[in-house]
Image (cartoon, rainbow, N blue to C red; front, side, top):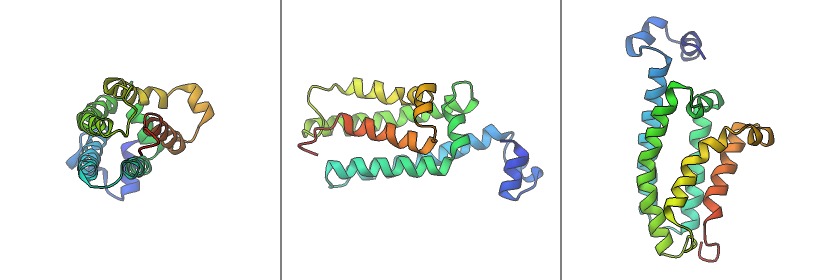
Length: 167
């Protein structure tokens, strides 16, 4: 999408746009920052809550879908495309989530919600690779809808390692 399209959609002039942003990538980074800040706050509060592990997984899926829907397909494609200027910024923000995820996953494993034979570094490795899976042409041919593909990957990741008898 172009700056002109952004301005038309937002019903602002290009002059107003350029008063605050240098280009469309600047606004993209601002959107990423705001979304991750809110998402991290929600995620941190949720993992602290005294609710069942299965409910936490459902809430993680819910916030993932809210963010996917809020971003929209073109923006998600920019975020996940390694050639996009937004990809590096997006990847750095994902790393911040990883450190919080280590705590959550370690606690869940210690409490028996994650299979004991699964190693946390492996889970993080797989989590880091979800973007690659998301953009894989074969997976896109199977699940062309961005939202559906995001949900399926999140579900697979979150449920595949859980210890169903304790969840």
